[in-house]
Image (tube, rainbow over all chains, first blue to last red):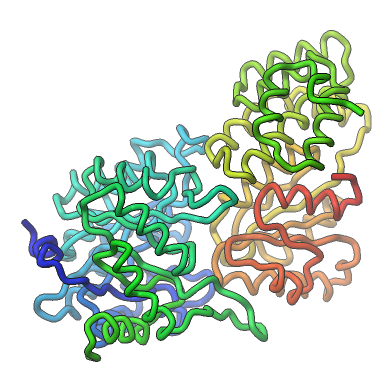
Length: 297
Length: 249
């Protein structure tokens, strides 16, 4: 068993990191800029981010590679830099990781809809795109790959899980994005947390879960439903609430203290690895560590 | 007053009965479908089932037997998409199904559009749609465009990363009266407000109604930036567009 999966199997609740995009925006990323470009152009910012999260008590951080697929990078003219930018993302996080801490290689959605789901993307091509990104992350030394914020369980997510396993053999964390509609919690493609949890387990994800999209109250419902259908560890990365505008500024309403207060319920619902998504930063991780471990780093 | 039993198509009747729960919408759709010719409801049923080859064939057949293009569009294609929109809003169907329905609608619409434009029949309104500057996300915007076209709007799609000048130029070039802006990122959302400001600076703000949407956008934010309307999802986008264009809906 990999040391990452062995650490989870020890049974402690592990604390991951907070948002990447939010941190980068506070550290020079222009609106609409390419986050992955920072891996080559501002490595000190990317390493500093990992250091800040580890200093706050993170057991693991994610790499700055959420939009590191060929599909996404090509939009910024970096389609030929997939291997390089993903490898750098992994190396920078790795270089900041203390002994016994982990690095998760982030893979986000391609932004494409597969032809079989009514879009235009070719599934073989998408499979290859995920393999390419996963190889870059593996070359940079990640402990596992976190495929996240996915909406298409049976298409895009399934391809990504197979591609990462095939290309790297690394443990796979697979998290989906749900939204609350009039009839409950669904992905954009119509899967429920329970059916998704079952399917992710069958697809061979080593860790399943959910991130982004909803505030912590709804996420507790998602995790509870996913727990009903799997014995795999569950990871969740939760937004600091739904953003709103105050005096022209974008504000995430949920404070570190509020989210930390709710984290015990997230764990009780079945989560084994917890962290923040959009709007969260190192101060959130510090609050989670303090609440769940009873000690501040 | 028309009743459910008056709808001359079993499939449409059952779909309406099963999936349309709001009383006002039920009444409105029962009224619409009970007045529609059976061969046009067949088109609606084909769209609702995502059968694009049938939608294509049935539309051609309806035109060949002399049904007017406008009637085929309103009572066939648009009538079918009306149920699609409601089923989507209520979580009975999801994005893949909507895309399949939209493709079926498009298969019929290609036969209608040339006839309408040749006979000088105007669309409900011309809508300029785009994702704002700096934002490369278009899944939600594209869904809105499909439903807008399905409702009878002419849509000019400016794609992603659209500058204020591109919006303004397109409005002037096409004589559009509606503009729809989308953003997925919180960081690019403020570019909606900047685009509206550019319309004011260019002295063309009063020529158009502007609607906004996207995951992080809220009604409050839409207000604050000076938009005319906000839509929470693709179905609301169509309702908002109809309201802004001054047509019933």
